[in-house]
Image (tube, rainbow, N blue to C red):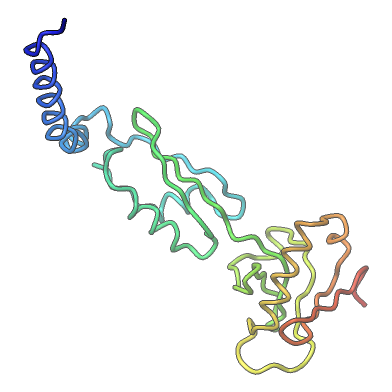
Length: 195
């Protein structure tokens, strides 16, 4: 037969432990932030091809007194502001390293404006020198005169299709020389060397 006093004792102990944890757990990040062992001593950059790690580190602007348990959202926002960055994720690696994983915008074509400017799948101009990065990409152009800026709906449709084809069949895509946007929905591809 069980004694009721033992059950009440266990229940009281569980309630006191739960109350203590609910009070202490929110204080843990603040306490850890004051421990020098968790000071950010290194910033590791992953996933860059066109940007340099130094570019990302400058943009991240992690303060000298930063701690691993500080909010990393401002660091991610500063890196995301770079034109070449599509997405960024900041994670922590104990004891003192922040890891910044970058997904860059990928050039899919060259837009004649009148010089050739690399553009991504959204038709956004990218600040890349085609000669420096040896970009072998097709020229993307509008077939009919369009109103508005060069990255019009027709150009954006052509760049989206260019990105899709480059991923679906890289071998075929390597031979495409010109992508012509025929309105906002049709695209013409010229395969082989451009005349």
